[in-house]
Length: 151
Image (tube, rainbow, N blue to C red; front, side, top):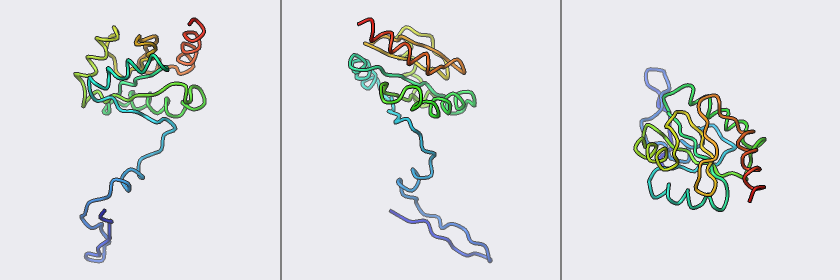
């Protein structure tokens, strides 16, 4: 770990040019009540679909350059604990880095690709699909209750 120091040059303090430790960089990120799990490979998609037989999962497909997507993600993070909590496991898919995987998700779940998009997956099936500011966690919660009561 390299710590960041300050150097005084011409009477002005400037940071030294060194590497910042990962723990320090992570501490600068805003905290989120959601424990995002990343989705980065087809193998992880297979595992996620199998896991959805045990408990509900949501996949949030996010474009890191879109302000609407950032707003939707922020709303999810602010409302998560109050509306959904630990009953649903959240996954995060970065569309710009993993576009082929995003296309595979859409194909395998039979949904049209959108961004931002929230998919609720239960027993390997997408039971809720919403995009943009139409994403509603109260509806996700209700879909989970409906699915569990019909088993």
